[in-house]
Length: 289
Image (cartoon, rainbow, N blue to C red; front, side):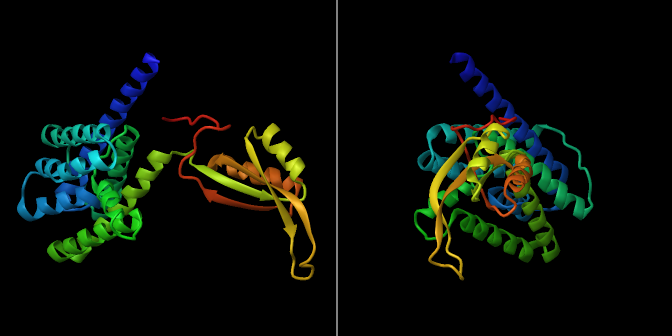
């Protein structure tokens, strides 16, 4: 047990350190020298830096502190302490690591600045902390308004980009929106990985054969719901009992599953749904963290 805890602790430190280094590279190598922005608290910090010319390292630390305190109450103290240490680490990284400016090409800055920022934020999340307090703010706001977390974050970012458009021009704001989009997609990719899970529901008259194929060939666990099929327009009163098969696979396995089902029953009704998180049951271990 001690070895497992030590291994987890070391992996969290490594992930967080990698995240800090990537975020520092994105900021000093791409965004700050070219007056570009990101979303969230980082975007607010960059905006304050451009308007008042205060060192970005100090602004990021100070701007995140209120949300770190909020996180101690909204999530837990362990998360808040980790996030505080990570944000301080990012500030020190920005102060003392001599990152070179990579390019001044606006398109390259907007895309690759977002890529490296997203990688950094994603690794920090895998390390159990956050380098941006906007989601903590969204959780706090969620309890007081009827909007979802995504809608709250979107509203905050729209306000940031509107201010950026007013202060620094519309082209910069538009490029910065591209940076934010790229960063958010890359963050999702790093956090979820290539093996993001997908829920698959299969309705077929050949359910027995399909169940056997899924378990014996694909090696997946299945859950069976009892249902009825039929209810067609020309024969609405006619229905038949059917086993509705549900399983969870990675998106890399999804095509193989569909081909397997099609071979058994070309007319099977198959639909998928995104699974944000899966644990326990008969799941293959992720290749990553």
